[in-house]
Image 1: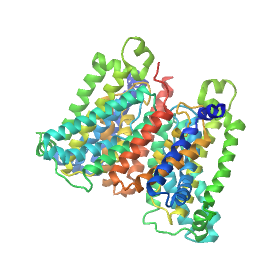
Image 2: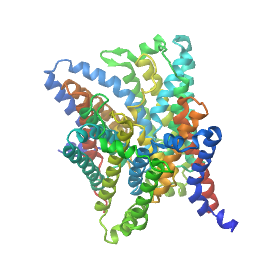
Image 3: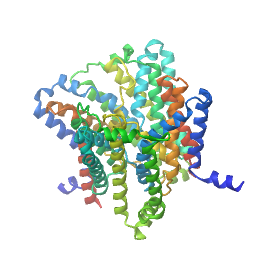
Image 4: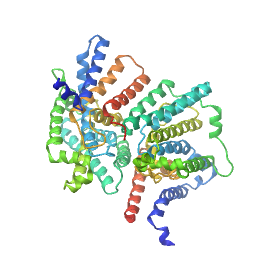
Length: 315
Length: 311
């Protein structure tokens, strides 16, 4: 009984419960056929959402008003640049990866400069920088139809015992980030700033350095996602990042991170990413039309956020 | 006298108008033929729906929220306008009223559960888009005749889009900036606790603002199909970003209820003109959104400079 109580108090538990409920509903509908395959596919796709989700989580945790809206365009730019640099050759793989990460770092620096030097609210800063990044991606990647290097394509789609290799790597990474969040000075600084920026500054926390690192981290993770996603889906496309705008924010909120800042939860992101993919899969298996699918996705996300992410009305 | 003109307060107030005038002058310099009744009409005709969407976004920003679904919502109302409203007007009007009601309900939900508006509206953008796809699976439909007639008005001397946007801006200004309840509504963005202690219902205020946003979203959708005469679920996807950028360009602050309806209209006009300007300069459309982002950053940089003087 106490175990149940401690478990129900964990903020991440809801995303996992939702994930299991949806998977079970799908499995019952199909009579259990292909349920294991669904899990494999979900792990693959959820990894991409979770990668950007982790970056978004650190940004959101630094306090109200902090959101990175430039993630989709960073994904597009990084994918386009990497594909063009590598031009389908295995030998260029390290160069492509470096170029991709370089894009991410540049975006992070740009976002931070807009926020810090021009004092633009982060949402507007990342929004306007996303305009610039997207334009660059469009101009640079026009008519881009380059296949990813075979090695990258193999790596991103490889499986061991039905588990995507990418998901295994990500699990290790997520564990590392969880340690960073909870056990390092940087991670604790992020949470402290999210709770009260003024107090954090007065306590001697290096606020500006932490904010810079946070926006850089988010952009670099988005770039990584773009790089891997281009490999996974057989080439970069300009709109491949689009769904990650809602995706990255939704998994953070559903996963139990407080939008008011100062409270972050990494395991929840993993559950929430699976939940998001399984939700779409479920609606697909039920044979819903495109319109119904969109409406249901939206309503379920809003409903889950109302239940899991809401707080008491302002008093 | 000169000191008054260069005071930060005045500079801040004229910044949106100044950016607009400079852009317009640049356009006339590059393409003198734009400086005519016909040229202005052509260049500015799409500013009416954009300005209406910007005003909708402004209402939401006034109460410290952000609507990331207004583009999809305008798309939905455009689809309703081009199908239901044209075929069976009563049903169409009811559907559009339901849309406004849904917005009011969203405001209530966001207030009641203290939800982040960004996430809720992002989720709702799927609902609006899905609804639009259900109503109009493929691009098409026809706008009702009276909508087309209004949008195609040929006013004497001054082109219709200019008159229309001016009327919108001034009437919203009168209600939001000059009326007593308008001041309360802005106060909800500035200091919600004080407004609540003074005995006003925050729930009602949020619902009123969201309903107003929904209403202007409907107007935006209708005016849009008045110009295109057909609709498509994705017809207004870009409006979400345009609307946010327009409010900010027009001198609105992101938090604190500091907004300006007339500024927002000017902001929307500036953004719309950027497109024409780049076309006249023969710059590839690839860079159009980038240039809009650049202008946004430039204006915000100027404002930061003025602010530094201020404090």
